[in-house]
Image (cartoon, rainbow, N blue to C red):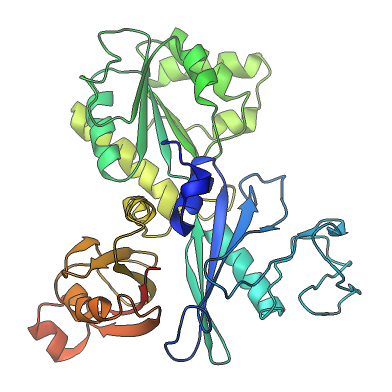
Length: 420
């Protein structure tokens, strides 16, 4: 990941810096009933979720972070043991009592989210739901619209083995948003020319490479080395680290069985070994390297989008991190941001998708293309420089939408905001 200078960062740069450091973030955007200035009706707060819900045995507290503009709402940190007195100044805290901007309940030793304007349990439970599900959510509180948007580190796919299956897997995975790292101990297999789509190519022994990579709970690991000796070397190291979102291993049933039985005899966690995806990939009858790589990638996507066992926190937003990178790097260029904040029915993009609109009408990113974008670009250009926002509904149902080519048939609500 690129190094980011904290002193020179705007709001999005700081957000990306946190994601580069493998931190979770929950961004709370509070919108008034009607469009207004960023300093009055438009507050945005960033909650540091640390490693909440990424480990089944660990929960961390939330800490307060700055929000842009003058409309700052501070978030006080509530720990499992009560209130962090170093962060709460002159605020009295009683059991089950709301006093200024602090609430706690000593009967429930859990993480509490606190906001000066949002102190009820509906908000707290909704924030927890967003963190667990990995999917943005809109909720209403009186005349206000509250958009909760989780951000997670970019998913890293580590391919252990640079053989013929790794080639298409690296390419296809990079094109679907994964940050791809390829490891092999042979220089002729582990080089950037062979893997142009990989962000990182390491020519090193598998054990040393894994130690260098510092595995996190957001990693996807695919073990496709050239022999069971190397498979075993990889798994021995991986099974000593915190469990990752995905671990899959290729090989015949006999070869895989020998390796896994050996690891069980060595005392490694049998339940965790049983969770290794092997045979690797979804069963689609794949034969060629390209087909096998597609079956593996399909299994990765299935784990990311459909896994609901809450063992891991995964990112189910439709956000393209490249849009955030543009917002972080183009600080002085006038523009507006369009974000899909709610959907009903079948829509071209999901909640969290973002699009940048420049003064010329040019765009970066997408909320679905065609008519769904054309409807908002005019308003998005008009809002540039106004320090305000507006909400717009795009209805893709009915005869009019059908005649204009909106074949999805759903409804999207988008937030259009001046980027300041």
